[in-house]
Length: 501
Image (cartoon, one colour):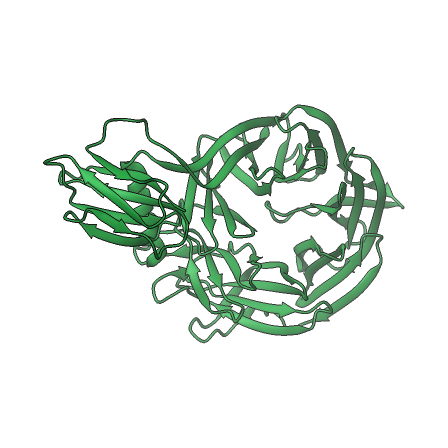
């Protein structure tokens, strides 16, 4: 496919010509969690440039005594303050334990400037009631409000939490099953229940799918499709015997009325959805959206990828395949025309971070390995005010996982910047540079090239020229930076930056 071919060409150019796109790790730090098993990682940049880092920790790997931990640090990891939000014990005569069911669930949300909400799901062991708790804090980690609302009563075995999130109206949106009844609720951060929908029509446990009969629902996702008008989506991934797992999606308006539905099974005739780790939909400014998922390719290899759909739900692109599928956890972020894709290998402590353009062409990718012993949890991507990108996650530092650590990396990102190779005598010259219309090339005697190729900074081939050419007419090309790739008869390649004014 075009995108995969582009990735191969770009990687070959960058490797052969000792040139790379502008990205580098500018800072990194680790926060040790000795004696604690931690999952989840949330990072926010405060107005003064400090960071708030959140995780959920427990002395037990089963999270019987879990608590939320919020840490305020400098950008390079110096700790100012730490807030522990413990599971309530005996509050109003109720004995709570915290419900933990997804290792990558978000639980901290920015509400307004430097105010935040910390969300918990609680189970009252005495009467099998379920509650949602919202703790409001400011940037100095002061608690400004603490509200708990009962939302359901059911036997533990028949109760399954789904995603929750805070929407642009600063309402908490939650969903869950009790027995076979599906619930969607809107709750204000003051504890007021504003909307409560119960249905048995959505996501039955088994679904007679047209191509894969008797599929079983085993993973769901919930989030925001567009903010204006406010539209939600609900994903349901179904497991099949063939391991090609179709995904069903409902779209809802602000009042949870269904406005559309869509089946997702494959990107094209060869690339298939292959896992239930479909995390979310990422809305784009032009009305298109991305779906983050595991994908299986014709060679039966699998990994994480982003698939892009237009506003009519038609597939229009797929990102390069990065990493492996050994239980990957994935997240993605769209910042205007720049997309960040981050996923990790749960088993061996390897993290991949990629930067792409809006057409899913790869600008750069970074692989971080040797991160803890095993179990990378809770990827977080945070764009900073200065344009840098922060990636954070949690990993076990011992086995069994009695100690964990929060890893935070800051990368400087210049998707269009180029780091030049060291200067050396070249068997050619090209001029003028910058130029307006025509680029002239001169080669030393006996050094005529096999070919000359011109690429734009998105990696697309603009033109290919034979060894007999002496100049390139660029008068009709838009102003900008281009890459000139010169290939010699012995296979050596050189890459030069060309500026069109």
